[in-house]
Image (cartoon, rainbow, N blue to C red; front, side, top):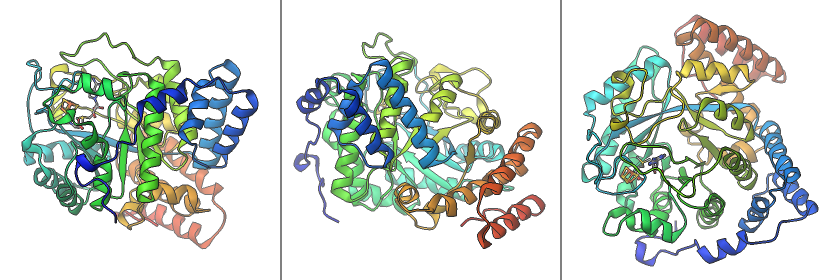
Amino acid sequence: MTVLCSTHTDAKDFINDERLAGWLACARPDKQRVRELLAKSLAKEPLEPEETAALLAASDPDSTEAIFETARRLKREVYGNRIVLFAPLYIGSECVNDCRYCAFRRSNPAAVRRTLTQDEIREQLRALENKGHKRLILVFGEHPRYGPDFIAECVRTVYDFKVGHGEIRRVNINAAPMDHDGYRLVKAAGIGTYQIFQETYHHETYANIHPRGTRKADYLWRLHGVGRAMEAGCDDVGIGALFGLYDWRFEVLGLVSHARYLEESYGVGPHTISFPRLRSACGVETDWPHLVSNDDFKRLIAILRLSVPYTGLILTARERPELRREVMAFGVSQIDAGSRIELGGYTEAGDAQVMEREQFSLGDIRSLDEVLRELLQDGYLPSFCTACYRLGRTGEHFMEFAIPGFIQRYCTPNALATLTEYLVDYASPETRQLGLKAVERELAKQPDSSQKQELRGRLKRIQETDARDLYF
Ligand code: SAM
Ligand code: SF4
Protein backbone atom coordinates (compact mmCIF):
# COMPACT_ATOMS: atom_id res chain seq x y z
CA MET A 1 0.00 0.00 0.00
CA THR A 2 1.29 3.49 -0.78
CA VAL A 3 2.53 5.32 2.29
CA LEU A 4 0.87 8.70 2.08
CA CYS A 5 1.64 10.01 5.51
CA SER A 6 4.79 8.50 6.90
CA THR A 7 5.55 11.71 8.75
CA HIS A 8 3.36 14.70 9.39
CA THR A 9 5.74 17.03 7.59
CA ASP A 10 5.08 15.49 4.17
CA ALA A 11 1.42 14.77 4.85
CA LYS A 12 -1.19 16.60 2.85
CA ASP A 13 -3.59 18.90 4.63
CA PHE A 14 -6.83 18.02 2.88
CA ILE A 15 -8.95 20.26 5.08
CA ASN A 16 -9.08 23.72 3.56
CA ASP A 17 -10.96 25.98 5.97
CA GLU A 18 -11.73 28.63 3.36
CA ARG A 19 -13.16 26.09 0.96
CA LEU A 20 -15.38 24.53 3.64
CA ALA A 21 -16.53 27.97 4.81
CA GLY A 22 -17.24 28.90 1.16
CA TRP A 23 -19.48 25.86 0.71
CA LEU A 24 -21.28 26.72 3.93
CA ALA A 25 -21.96 30.21 2.67
CA CYS A 26 -23.77 28.81 -0.38
CA ALA A 27 -27.32 29.92 -1.06
CA ARG A 28 -30.22 27.89 0.31
CA PRO A 29 -31.00 25.20 -2.31
CA ASP A 30 -34.43 25.14 -3.92
CA LYS A 31 -36.83 22.29 -3.22
CA GLN A 32 -35.98 20.48 -6.45
CA ARG A 33 -32.28 20.42 -5.55
CA VAL A 34 -33.07 19.06 -2.08
CA ARG A 35 -35.22 16.35 -3.63
CA GLU A 36 -32.38 15.37 -6.00
CA LEU A 37 -29.89 15.12 -3.16
CA LEU A 38 -32.25 13.03 -1.05
CA ALA A 39 -32.85 10.70 -4.01
CA LYS A 40 -29.08 10.30 -4.42
CA SER A 41 -28.79 9.32 -0.74
CA LEU A 42 -31.63 6.82 -1.02
CA ALA A 43 -29.72 5.24 -3.91
CA LYS A 44 -26.84 4.80 -1.41
CA GLU A 45 -24.53 7.14 -3.27
CA PRO A 46 -22.18 9.13 -1.03
CA LEU A 47 -22.68 12.90 -1.20
CA GLU A 48 -19.85 15.25 -2.10
CA PRO A 49 -18.99 17.76 0.65
CA GLU A 50 -20.57 20.55 -1.46
CA GLU A 51 -23.76 18.52 -1.65
CA THR A 52 -23.71 17.97 2.10
CA ALA A 53 -23.29 21.74 2.47
CA ALA A 54 -26.44 22.24 0.39
CA LEU A 55 -28.39 19.98 2.77
CA LEU A 56 -26.95 21.89 5.74
CA ALA A 57 -28.25 25.12 4.17
CA ALA A 58 -31.71 23.63 3.63
CA SER A 59 -33.00 24.62 7.04
CA ASP A 60 -36.61 25.62 6.27
CA PRO A 61 -39.23 23.45 8.04
CA ASP A 62 -40.28 21.53 4.89
CA SER A 63 -36.71 20.63 3.91
CA THR A 64 -35.83 19.76 7.49
CA GLU A 65 -38.77 17.36 7.70
CA ALA A 66 -37.87 15.87 4.31
CA ILE A 67 -34.28 15.33 5.51
CA PHE A 68 -35.50 13.63 8.71
CA GLU A 69 -37.97 11.47 6.84
CA THR A 70 -35.41 10.38 4.25
CA ALA A 71 -32.87 9.52 6.96
CA ARG A 72 -35.53 7.43 8.75
CA ARG A 73 -36.43 5.72 5.47
CA LEU A 74 -32.83 5.01 4.59
CA LYS A 75 -32.36 3.50 8.02
CA ARG A 76 -35.49 1.36 7.75
CA GLU A 77 -35.19 0.21 4.17
CA VAL A 78 -31.48 0.01 3.67
CA TYR A 79 -29.91 -0.73 7.02
CA GLY A 80 -32.70 -2.67 8.68
CA ASN A 81 -33.39 -2.59 12.39
CA ARG A 82 -30.19 -3.93 13.95
CA ILE A 83 -28.39 -1.90 16.60
CA VAL A 84 -24.98 -3.13 17.75
CA LEU A 85 -24.22 -2.74 21.47
CA PHE A 86 -20.85 -2.13 23.13
CA ALA A 87 -19.34 -0.67 26.30
CA PRO A 88 -16.36 1.63 26.93
CA LEU A 89 -13.63 0.60 29.37
CA TYR A 90 -11.40 3.45 30.55
CA ILE A 91 -7.90 2.15 31.27
CA GLY A 92 -6.00 5.25 32.34
CA SER A 93 -6.48 8.96 33.09
CA GLU A 94 -2.86 10.08 32.95
CA CYS A 95 -2.32 12.58 30.16
CA VAL A 96 0.49 14.78 28.86
CA ASN A 97 -1.89 16.96 26.85
CA ASP A 98 -3.88 19.95 27.98
CA CYS A 99 -7.06 19.88 25.89
CA ARG A 100 -9.25 22.63 27.29
CA TYR A 101 -12.46 20.58 27.17
CA CYS A 102 -11.20 17.46 28.96
CA ALA A 103 -11.03 16.61 32.66
CA PHE A 104 -7.95 14.45 32.09
CA ARG A 105 -5.88 17.43 30.83
CA ARG A 106 -2.60 17.75 32.65
CA SER A 107 -3.32 21.16 34.21
CA ASN A 108 -6.43 19.89 36.02
CA PRO A 109 -5.43 19.33 39.66
CA ALA A 110 -8.88 18.00 40.58
CA ALA A 111 -8.70 14.95 38.32
CA VAL A 112 -7.96 11.65 40.04
CA ARG A 113 -5.06 10.04 38.12
CA ARG A 114 -5.22 6.32 37.87
CA THR A 115 -4.15 3.52 35.57
CA LEU A 116 -5.79 0.14 35.97
CA THR A 117 -3.45 -2.77 36.56
CA GLN A 118 -4.01 -5.92 34.49
CA ASP A 119 -5.70 -7.47 37.55
CA GLU A 120 -7.94 -4.45 37.94
CA ILE A 121 -8.81 -4.71 34.25
CA ARG A 122 -9.85 -8.33 34.88
CA GLU A 123 -12.09 -7.18 37.71
CA GLN A 124 -13.81 -4.74 35.34
CA LEU A 125 -14.10 -7.50 32.74
CA ARG A 126 -15.73 -9.83 35.21
CA ALA A 127 -18.42 -7.20 35.83
CA LEU A 128 -18.84 -6.42 32.12
CA GLU A 129 -19.00 -10.04 30.98
CA ASN A 130 -21.44 -10.90 33.77
CA LYS A 131 -23.76 -8.25 32.36
CA GLY A 132 -23.56 -9.80 28.88
CA HIS A 133 -21.19 -7.51 27.01
CA LYS A 134 -19.31 -8.96 24.04
CA ARG A 135 -17.78 -5.84 22.48
CA LEU A 136 -15.60 -3.27 24.23
CA ILE A 137 -13.75 -0.12 23.39
CA LEU A 138 -10.68 0.53 25.54
CA VAL A 139 -9.99 4.21 26.16
CA PHE A 140 -6.65 5.77 27.12
CA GLY A 141 -5.28 9.25 27.87
CA GLU A 142 -2.09 10.14 26.01
CA HIS A 143 0.92 9.30 28.13
CA PRO A 144 4.28 7.53 27.72
CA ARG A 145 2.88 4.82 30.02
CA TYR A 146 0.19 4.08 27.41
CA GLY A 147 2.48 3.18 24.53
CA PRO A 148 1.57 0.52 21.93
CA ASP A 149 3.12 -2.29 24.03
CA PHE A 150 0.94 -1.44 27.00
CA ILE A 151 -2.16 -1.06 24.84
CA ALA A 152 -1.46 -4.43 23.19
CA GLU A 153 -1.04 -6.03 26.63
CA CYS A 154 -4.42 -4.65 27.74
CA VAL A 155 -6.06 -5.95 24.56
CA ARG A 156 -4.66 -9.44 25.14
CA THR A 157 -5.79 -9.38 28.77
CA VAL A 158 -9.32 -8.66 27.59
CA TYR A 159 -9.43 -11.45 25.00
CA ASP A 160 -7.98 -13.94 27.49
CA PHE A 161 -10.47 -13.34 30.29
CA LYS A 162 -13.64 -15.43 30.29
CA VAL A 163 -16.31 -15.95 32.97
CA GLY A 164 -18.90 -18.69 32.42
CA HIS A 165 -20.45 -18.01 29.03
CA GLY A 166 -18.98 -14.53 29.18
CA GLU A 167 -16.22 -13.42 26.83
CA ILE A 168 -15.27 -10.27 25.00
CA ARG A 169 -15.11 -11.11 21.31
CA ARG A 170 -14.11 -7.78 19.86
CA VAL A 171 -11.85 -5.13 21.38
CA ASN A 172 -11.71 -1.70 19.78
CA ILE A 173 -9.44 1.08 21.01
CA ASN A 174 -9.58 4.85 21.31
CA ALA A 175 -6.03 5.98 21.91
CA ALA A 176 -3.67 8.75 20.83
CA PRO A 177 -2.24 8.58 17.29
CA MET A 178 0.76 6.28 16.83
CA ASP A 179 3.44 5.67 14.25
CA HIS A 180 3.25 2.74 11.83
CA ASP A 181 5.17 0.37 14.11
CA GLY A 182 2.86 1.19 17.00
CA TYR A 183 -0.20 0.42 14.93
CA ARG A 184 1.33 -2.88 13.80
CA LEU A 185 1.80 -3.88 17.42
CA VAL A 186 -1.77 -3.16 18.47
CA LYS A 187 -3.11 -4.76 15.31
CA ALA A 188 -1.14 -7.92 16.09
CA ALA A 189 -2.88 -8.02 19.49
CA GLY A 190 -6.17 -8.32 17.60
CA ILE A 191 -7.86 -4.93 17.80
CA GLY A 192 -11.08 -4.47 15.87
CA THR A 193 -11.55 -0.76 15.15
CA TYR A 194 -8.92 1.90 15.80
CA GLN A 195 -10.84 5.03 16.65
CA ILE A 196 -9.65 8.59 17.05
CA PHE A 197 -11.46 11.91 16.88
CA GLN A 198 -10.05 15.02 15.22
CA GLU A 199 -12.07 16.97 17.86
CA THR A 200 -12.38 19.99 15.54
CA TYR A 201 -11.47 20.27 11.86
CA HIS A 202 -11.20 24.07 12.14
CA HIS A 203 -7.50 24.90 12.32
CA GLU A 204 -7.69 28.07 14.39
CA THR A 205 -10.03 26.54 16.94
CA TYR A 206 -7.87 23.42 17.06
CA ALA A 207 -4.82 25.58 17.87
CA ASN A 208 -6.71 27.51 20.56
CA ILE A 209 -7.85 24.49 22.52
CA HIS A 210 -4.75 22.32 22.17
CA PRO A 211 -1.93 24.44 23.62
CA ARG A 212 1.30 24.74 21.68
CA GLY A 213 4.06 22.47 22.87
CA THR A 214 1.68 19.62 23.68
CA ARG A 215 1.64 16.50 21.53
CA LYS A 216 -1.94 16.97 20.54
CA ALA A 217 -1.21 20.46 19.15
CA ASP A 218 0.02 18.81 15.93
CA TYR A 219 -3.13 18.97 13.80
CA LEU A 220 -1.69 17.00 10.87
CA TRP A 221 -0.21 14.21 12.97
CA ARG A 222 -3.70 13.63 14.29
CA LEU A 223 -5.51 14.17 10.98
CA HIS A 224 -3.40 11.42 9.40
CA GLY A 225 -3.57 9.16 12.46
CA VAL A 226 -6.16 6.85 10.91
CA GLY A 227 -4.41 6.95 7.53
CA ARG A 228 -1.20 5.67 9.15
CA ALA A 229 -3.26 3.03 10.93
CA MET A 230 -4.62 1.85 7.57
CA GLU A 231 -1.15 1.80 6.04
CA ALA A 232 -0.02 -0.37 8.97
CA GLY A 233 -2.80 -2.87 8.35
CA CYS A 234 -5.61 -1.64 10.63
CA ASP A 235 -8.18 -1.45 7.86
CA ASP A 236 -11.02 -0.78 10.26
CA VAL A 237 -10.92 2.79 11.53
CA GLY A 238 -13.32 5.21 13.20
CA ILE A 239 -13.26 9.00 12.96
CA GLY A 240 -15.19 11.65 14.88
CA ALA A 241 -15.52 15.27 15.91
CA LEU A 242 -16.31 16.69 19.32
CA PHE A 243 -19.36 18.81 18.61
CA GLY A 244 -19.52 22.12 20.49
CA LEU A 245 -15.98 23.33 19.88
CA TYR A 246 -16.78 25.10 16.60
CA ASP A 247 -19.69 25.58 14.14
CA TRP A 248 -21.35 22.15 13.90
CA ARG A 249 -21.98 22.52 10.18
CA PHE A 250 -18.26 23.04 9.55
CA GLU A 251 -17.47 19.88 11.53
CA VAL A 252 -19.98 17.86 9.46
CA LEU A 253 -18.17 18.99 6.31
CA GLY A 254 -14.83 18.13 7.96
CA LEU A 255 -16.06 14.60 8.72
CA VAL A 256 -17.47 14.07 5.24
CA SER A 257 -14.22 15.40 3.67
CA HIS A 258 -12.19 13.09 5.91
CA ALA A 259 -14.32 10.09 4.94
CA ARG A 260 -13.92 10.93 1.24
CA TYR A 261 -10.18 11.38 1.63
CA LEU A 262 -9.80 7.92 3.20
CA GLU A 263 -11.95 6.34 0.52
CA GLU A 264 -9.96 7.96 -2.28
CA SER A 265 -6.57 7.26 -0.70
CA TYR A 266 -7.08 3.74 0.65
CA GLY A 267 -10.06 2.42 -1.27
CA VAL A 268 -12.18 2.10 1.87
CA GLY A 269 -13.76 4.78 4.03
CA PRO A 270 -14.02 4.84 7.82
CA HIS A 271 -16.00 2.01 9.42
CA THR A 272 -17.63 4.43 11.84
CA ILE A 273 -18.20 8.11 12.51
CA SER A 274 -18.77 9.35 16.06
CA PHE A 275 -20.35 12.68 16.86
CA PRO A 276 -19.93 13.22 20.62
CA ARG A 277 -21.29 16.48 22.02
CA LEU A 278 -19.30 18.41 24.57
CA ARG A 279 -20.37 17.53 28.12
CA SER A 280 -19.70 19.15 31.46
CA ALA A 281 -16.54 17.82 33.05
CA CYS A 282 -14.64 18.27 36.28
CA GLY A 283 -12.58 21.48 36.18
CA VAL A 284 -13.65 22.37 32.65
CA GLU A 285 -15.05 25.80 31.70
CA THR A 286 -18.71 25.86 30.72
CA ASP A 287 -19.16 28.88 28.43
CA TRP A 288 -18.45 27.37 25.04
CA PRO A 289 -19.87 29.57 22.25
CA HIS A 290 -20.65 26.75 19.81
CA LEU A 291 -22.63 24.29 21.93
CA VAL A 292 -25.05 22.36 19.72
CA SER A 293 -28.79 22.46 20.48
CA ASN A 294 -30.87 19.28 20.43
CA ASP A 295 -32.58 20.39 17.21
CA ASP A 296 -29.28 20.97 15.44
CA PHE A 297 -27.94 17.70 16.84
CA LYS A 298 -30.82 15.85 15.19
CA ARG A 299 -30.14 17.57 11.88
CA LEU A 300 -26.46 16.78 12.01
CA ILE A 301 -27.11 13.07 12.56
CA ALA A 302 -29.69 12.90 9.77
CA ILE A 303 -27.41 14.76 7.34
CA LEU A 304 -24.42 12.58 8.21
CA ARG A 305 -26.57 9.51 7.60
CA LEU A 306 -27.53 10.81 4.18
CA SER A 307 -23.95 11.83 3.25
CA VAL A 308 -21.99 8.66 4.09
CA PRO A 309 -24.19 5.67 3.27
CA TYR A 310 -21.50 3.02 3.91
CA THR A 311 -20.38 4.27 7.30
CA GLY A 312 -21.71 3.17 10.67
CA LEU A 313 -22.84 5.93 13.03
CA ILE A 314 -22.08 5.69 16.75
CA LEU A 315 -24.31 7.42 19.31
CA THR A 316 -22.82 7.48 22.80
CA ALA A 317 -24.19 7.55 26.32
CA ARG A 318 -23.13 11.20 26.59
CA GLU A 319 -26.70 11.85 25.40
CA ARG A 320 -29.80 11.55 27.58
CA PRO A 321 -32.10 8.51 27.16
CA GLU A 322 -35.04 10.39 25.61
CA LEU A 323 -32.90 11.96 22.92
CA ARG A 324 -31.05 8.71 22.25
CA ARG A 325 -34.40 7.03 21.69
CA GLU A 326 -35.53 9.68 19.26
CA VAL A 327 -32.40 10.01 17.12
CA MET A 328 -31.82 6.27 16.85
CA ALA A 329 -34.30 6.26 13.98
CA PHE A 330 -32.10 8.54 11.86
CA GLY A 331 -29.65 5.79 11.05
CA VAL A 332 -27.55 5.15 14.12
CA SER A 333 -25.96 1.70 13.91
CA GLN A 334 -24.08 1.35 17.22
CA ILE A 335 -24.64 2.54 20.77
CA ASP A 336 -22.92 1.94 24.07
CA ALA A 337 -25.07 0.76 26.95
CA GLY A 338 -24.62 0.12 30.65
CA SER A 339 -21.60 2.42 30.38
CA ARG A 340 -19.55 3.74 33.32
CA ILE A 341 -16.50 5.80 32.54
CA GLU A 342 -15.02 6.38 36.00
CA LEU A 343 -11.73 4.47 36.22
CA GLY A 344 -12.83 1.21 37.83
CA GLY A 345 -16.44 2.36 37.48
CA TYR A 346 -17.98 -1.03 36.68
CA THR A 347 -17.17 -2.33 40.14
CA GLU A 348 -16.54 0.74 42.25
CA ALA A 349 -19.09 3.38 41.24
CA GLY A 350 -22.56 3.54 42.74
CA ASP A 351 -25.72 5.01 41.24
CA ALA A 352 -24.28 8.52 40.96
CA GLN A 353 -21.37 9.53 38.75
CA VAL A 354 -18.11 10.67 40.36
CA MET A 355 -16.96 13.65 38.29
CA GLU A 356 -13.36 13.76 39.54
CA ARG A 357 -12.90 10.20 38.37
CA GLU A 358 -14.22 10.55 34.84
CA GLN A 359 -13.32 12.41 31.68
CA PHE A 360 -16.77 14.00 31.38
CA SER A 361 -20.26 13.24 32.68
CA LEU A 362 -22.58 10.78 30.96
CA GLY A 363 -26.23 11.48 30.12
CA ASP A 364 -27.37 7.85 30.17
CA ILE A 365 -26.20 5.43 32.84
CA ARG A 366 -29.05 2.96 32.52
CA SER A 367 -28.12 -0.71 32.64
CA LEU A 368 -27.50 -2.76 29.50
CA ASP A 369 -30.69 -4.71 30.24
CA GLU A 370 -32.82 -1.55 30.42
CA VAL A 371 -31.39 -0.09 27.22
CA LEU A 372 -31.76 -3.37 25.38
CA ARG A 373 -35.37 -3.73 26.57
CA GLU A 374 -36.20 -0.28 25.27
CA LEU A 375 -34.66 -1.15 21.90
CA LEU A 376 -36.86 -4.24 21.73
CA GLN A 377 -39.93 -2.23 22.66
CA ASP A 378 -39.14 0.18 19.83
CA GLY A 379 -38.84 -2.63 17.27
CA TYR A 380 -35.03 -2.74 16.98
CA LEU A 381 -32.97 -5.89 16.89
CA PRO A 382 -30.11 -5.56 19.42
CA SER A 383 -26.97 -7.35 18.24
CA PHE A 384 -23.64 -8.36 19.78
CA CYS A 385 -22.38 -9.81 16.51
CA THR A 386 -18.61 -9.91 15.91
CA ALA A 387 -18.58 -12.42 13.05
CA CYS A 388 -17.25 -10.37 10.13
CA TYR A 389 -14.22 -9.16 11.96
CA ARG A 390 -13.40 -12.67 13.21
CA LEU A 391 -13.87 -14.25 9.78
CA GLY A 392 -11.69 -11.63 8.16
CA ARG A 393 -14.64 -10.04 6.37
CA THR A 394 -13.11 -6.63 6.92
CA GLY A 395 -14.57 -3.47 5.56
CA GLU A 396 -17.71 -5.11 6.89
CA HIS A 397 -19.85 -2.03 6.69
CA PHE A 398 -19.11 -1.63 3.07
CA MET A 399 -20.08 -5.25 2.39
CA GLU A 400 -23.15 -5.11 4.57
CA PHE A 401 -24.68 -2.38 2.52
CA ALA A 402 -23.12 -2.95 -0.87
CA ILE A 403 -23.55 -6.70 -1.33
CA PRO A 404 -27.14 -7.64 -2.07
CA GLY A 405 -28.55 -10.02 0.53
CA PHE A 406 -25.57 -9.66 2.88
CA ILE A 407 -27.66 -8.40 5.81
CA GLN A 408 -30.23 -11.14 5.39
CA ARG A 409 -27.60 -13.85 5.00
CA TYR A 410 -25.20 -12.89 7.77
CA CYS A 411 -26.11 -9.87 9.88
CA THR A 412 -29.68 -10.74 10.86
CA PRO A 413 -28.98 -14.43 11.68
CA ASN A 414 -25.91 -13.44 13.71
CA ALA A 415 -27.88 -10.73 15.50
CA LEU A 416 -30.55 -13.31 16.37
CA ALA A 417 -27.98 -15.79 17.70
CA THR A 418 -26.12 -13.24 19.83
CA LEU A 419 -29.36 -11.74 21.11
CA THR A 420 -30.59 -15.21 22.06
CA GLU A 421 -27.35 -15.80 23.97
CA TYR A 422 -27.94 -12.59 25.88
CA LEU A 423 -31.56 -13.43 26.61
CA VAL A 424 -30.72 -16.91 27.90
CA ASP A 425 -27.62 -16.00 29.90
CA TYR A 426 -28.09 -12.48 31.25
CA ALA A 427 -31.50 -10.88 30.64
CA SER A 428 -34.07 -9.99 33.30
CA PRO A 429 -37.28 -12.06 33.00
CA GLU A 430 -39.15 -9.14 31.43
CA THR A 431 -36.46 -8.50 28.80
CA ARG A 432 -36.14 -12.22 28.11
CA GLN A 433 -39.85 -12.59 27.40
CA LEU A 434 -39.93 -9.57 25.13
CA GLY A 435 -36.71 -10.62 23.39
CA LEU A 436 -37.70 -14.20 22.67
CA LYS A 437 -40.90 -12.95 21.03
CA ALA A 438 -38.85 -10.54 18.92
CA VAL A 439 -36.53 -13.37 17.87
CA GLU A 440 -39.52 -15.45 16.72
CA ARG A 441 -40.93 -12.47 14.84
CA GLU A 442 -37.65 -11.80 13.05
CA LEU A 443 -37.18 -15.46 12.25
CA ALA A 444 -40.63 -15.60 10.69
CA LYS A 445 -39.62 -12.76 8.36
CA GLN A 446 -36.62 -14.74 7.03
CA PRO A 447 -37.39 -16.53 3.73
CA ASP A 448 -37.52 -20.33 3.92
CA SER A 449 -34.13 -21.84 3.15
CA SER A 450 -31.70 -24.42 4.45
CA GLN A 451 -29.91 -21.60 6.24
CA LYS A 452 -33.11 -20.71 8.08
CA GLN A 453 -33.45 -24.33 9.24
CA GLU A 454 -29.85 -24.26 10.36
CA LEU A 455 -30.43 -21.01 12.26
CA ARG A 456 -33.52 -22.40 13.95
CA GLY A 457 -31.47 -25.38 15.10
CA ARG A 458 -28.71 -23.16 16.42
CA LEU A 459 -31.10 -20.94 18.38
CA LYS A 460 -32.58 -24.06 19.96
CA ARG A 461 -29.12 -25.32 20.90
CA ILE A 462 -28.27 -21.99 22.51
CA GLN A 463 -31.46 -22.20 24.57
CA GLU A 464 -31.07 -25.83 25.58
CA THR A 465 -27.32 -26.45 25.79
CA ASP A 466 -24.04 -24.68 26.47
CA ALA A 467 -23.39 -24.15 22.75
CA ARG A 468 -22.42 -20.51 22.19
CA ASP A 469 -20.71 -18.30 19.65
CA LEU A 470 -22.35 -19.88 16.60
CA TYR A 471 -22.05 -17.54 13.67
CA PHE A 472 -22.35 -17.45 9.89
N1 SAM B 1 -6.55 10.72 24.80
C1 SAM B 1 -6.92 10.20 23.53
C2 SAM B 1 -7.15 11.29 22.55
O1 SAM B 1 -7.31 12.43 22.95
O2 SAM B 1 -7.21 10.98 21.38
C3 SAM B 1 -8.12 9.35 23.69
C4 SAM B 1 -9.37 10.04 23.57
S1 SAM B 1 -10.27 10.64 24.88
C5 SAM B 1 -9.92 9.62 26.22
C6 SAM B 1 -11.84 10.22 24.17
C7 SAM B 1 -12.59 11.37 23.54
O3 SAM B 1 -13.43 11.94 24.52
C8 SAM B 1 -11.82 12.55 23.02
O4 SAM B 1 -11.29 12.29 21.75
C9 SAM B 1 -12.85 13.65 23.02
O5 SAM B 1 -13.50 13.77 21.78
C10 SAM B 1 -13.88 13.19 24.05
N2 SAM B 1 -14.03 14.17 25.14
C11 SAM B 1 -13.06 14.77 25.84
N3 SAM B 1 -13.60 15.67 26.71
C12 SAM B 1 -14.94 15.62 26.53
C13 SAM B 1 -16.05 16.32 27.13
N4 SAM B 1 -15.89 17.26 28.05
N5 SAM B 1 -17.29 16.02 26.69
C14 SAM B 1 -17.50 15.07 25.75
N6 SAM B 1 -16.50 14.38 25.16
C15 SAM B 1 -15.22 14.66 25.53
FE1 SF4 C 1 -5.68 13.83 27.14
FE2 SF4 C 1 -7.36 12.88 25.29
FE3 SF4 C 1 -8.24 14.34 27.34
FE4 SF4 C 1 -6.84 15.53 25.50
S1 SF4 C 1 -8.86 14.50 25.20
S2 SF4 C 1 -6.53 15.81 27.70
S3 SF4 C 1 -5.43 13.93 24.94
S4 SF4 C 1 -7.34 12.33 27.45
